[in-house]
Image (tube, rainbow over all chains, first blue to last red; front, side, top):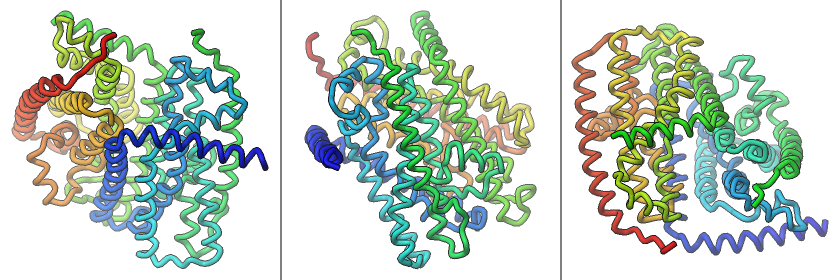
Length: 265
Length: 269
């Protein structure tokens, strides 16, 4: 437990330094956040364009899809805020600067991630909150005690799945030269995760539930709030998947750090 | 000219040396096609006539699916990271090396970009087409449309480069590359039909888009491929307008680049 608090304190110390350096680039802060917000406005606008010509997608109407979309945004926020350094991992490895993380008496994964906090995640969070409040008001979602307790747990589960998959994708660069395209591949699932999983064929549904669990990014857990009728096991399983994938990710990372040979300089 | 061909050739080679990269881009493409197939199938089954004969704003399920698959394949094809390369060169100061050489920087970047597109074409785009037309029933009838598609695609490549180079030249002014590059991708995707087929857009927005270059990047070549009957006059007109946009953007971007270059300061090495 003491070690846990030590890490929490360390995280805030490291992140505070990073935020100070980023504040030197105010313009970048505004442009990045604005782009983040505009991107989600465009995403919702394209959904609206589809839904104004068509009545529904597999029985789901516009407001319900916006709710799933907002759930996906909220679940992505921790990855965007705290895990964004993974996009730079290939650069650290190819230039050899990654070596410094071996010399500290703390977890290299923790140290690596805590060196950066991506402030455009705040724009993402804002979009998520606005879309969430708007859609749940429109849909008159009844906030029973069960749902209030479930919301943070399910969100945390989805976040853990997304963050773990993305980090595993980035960890490919421990073995191959450039993991960018693997990251972009996993990222492309994230962008489509708000569509109902019911629409896919049996094979794809299996893939999106078990192998690359895109269903748990947003759609399955969001069903818990959208449906009153009995819901399948998928609606509450995201924390379990999150824990499993997180443990797997830590193992992959540790293996990667042992396998990496450095650059020799 | 020979110098520029050499530059383009080198970029093709570098695309080929990152084969794993190309493989995953290809997989991303295929995945996008499959996902789009099921999304639009679900969308069209909710209307009268359904997947087989339902028509909304002149689009059937098959033509919509072909439209969105082609745009997502072309989006990866034309992505050559011009602005990111320029940002790297400007930040590190390496750009100064190119200003000393007897080649024109803009033409150098263009050869680079076209070389990368050629590499993408062989490794990602053509295999994508093979899967698209081999696996799915797209209702595509080959004919004159292939020739006009190829011609307008050349124009799209030029327009795409001009917009990327414009963003790259903006890096002389700011280091906020993620923000401006992502904003560019977003604006282009939304206004060109790469996100949602343009025929579904509200009419007011559509008529505004006719006065912007973006629709000529994706909507023009792709709508040539999906149109049920040949419209040689309309297609020729479209390509002419595309050409005019190409020249206009070239002149504008060239002037902007020369102006921005004055902003450059590189520390002595």
